[in-house]
Amino acid sequence: MGLDGVTWFRQAAFRWQGDGPVVYVDPWGVGDGVPADVILITHAHHDHFQPHEIERLRTPTTKLVAPRDVADELTGDVTPIEPGQAVEASGLKIEAVPAYNTAEERLDMHPKANGWVGYLFEFGGRSYYHAGDTDALPELESLDPDVAMVPIGGTYTMDWEEAAGFVKAMEPRMAVPMHYGFVVCSPSHGGRFRKAAAPVPVQVLEPTNPFEQP
Image (cartoon, rainbow, N blue to C red; front, side, top):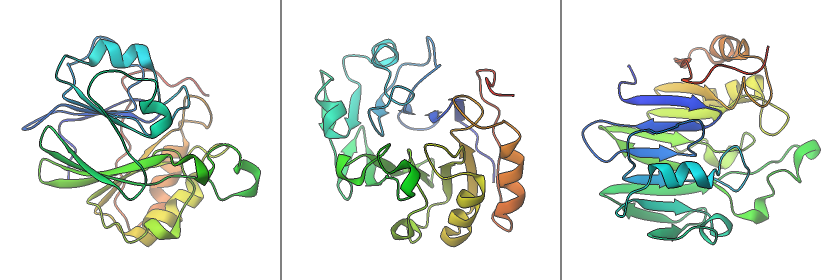
């Protein structure tokens, strides 16, 4: 299963482009990219919420979906969302799922009380789960997406070993590592994740921006 039309820019920033709306999640490092029909923001940290990137990508008809604290900082067609809620934007059905830390050493980084999110949506006949910044949450193992995009960098989220266990429990048709090689974690951990996640197929994407970690 390939991922035609999916672009990884850096960290957790992705674009979906094909037969349907142009969708971005957490745009960062996009530059003057293809104008967005839908922009989804997972949470307020700077490596996920870049207002100037949003302004470059948005048009008068762009629809934005974000947790309440992020939505309050945006103008235009903005829909606040909480874990467990679902909305429709430009014909795209979007479900917000929880994203938070459970490991004691990072409880204050992404507290559950903040209401930050990951997203589940369908594009091009496939269901995608973009995890946002989270630890491995048993409550999400039943999501059953075709493609699971999960952070593997550790420090702020689950690391590659924890992420491998998470996707093996979830059993998507494919897993894609993200949130590594830039702020924290060596680019080589993408390969480690791929081996550890077997038998779940893993596609390690090449970002459009050069990695910043050795």
